[in-house]
Image (cartoon, rainbow, N blue to C red; front, side):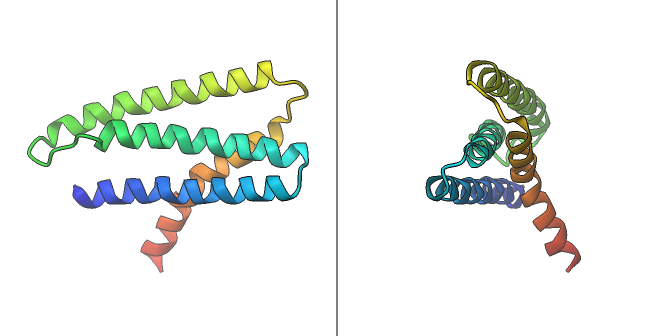
Length: 122
């Protein structure tokens, strides 16, 4: 199960890297669409980080039966966090642009999964 823990933290690191790249592009190209994409990526990355930390933060290989319960609880928290942050951003910020926001959110979530599939099949 340690391998799963390492893969989860690698996914968070990859999401952090993608978010950082979007942030750098946003700083170089100060359009609203890039800013909204960066916000979407940051929401996805932070929610995944909370989920991984909650699931594997104090994980002990001696108690694998607790892993499923932690996973279910942290996934619920992850989705709650995403809904709360998206609601706040879309309702409180003037002139929202949901397309780049959701595109980056989904992209940051899917990139580690797609890379993992490519690595396994290749």
